[in-house]
Image (cartoon, rainbow, N blue to C red; front, side):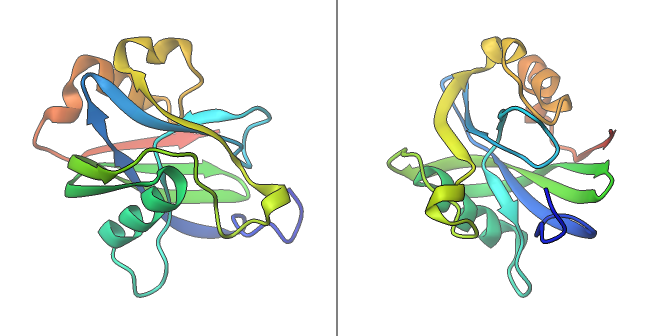
Length: 158
């Protein structure tokens, strides 16, 4: 990306959702600035000034997927550093969600520059075959550790 990249040269706080139903997790296939090819990630995005992390997650999920999570519980903190990108990502596990699943858009980007390719529920036992980021999520979801009642911390340096 170029010097007007809105995601670089600052520390971003991102709120991300783990929406799981019938042993499937909601994922968004999209372009990200640190990868050449699209990746699968949980829905989420930047927390705006004055907005709570939970409200940011609800807004981002609606924008990207058409569904709104509820009963949120902080489960993971992930620090991502790949200069010039640095993000603190808060992953919330949702008890439930409402709405109709559909491919959404990102209002920060023009119609011609949208990052989202697809949104869908992917079986947890098939995640290893997908390009899911961050990496720690696949193991946490497959082993069921995401159900534990504690907050996990992970760090990714590229």
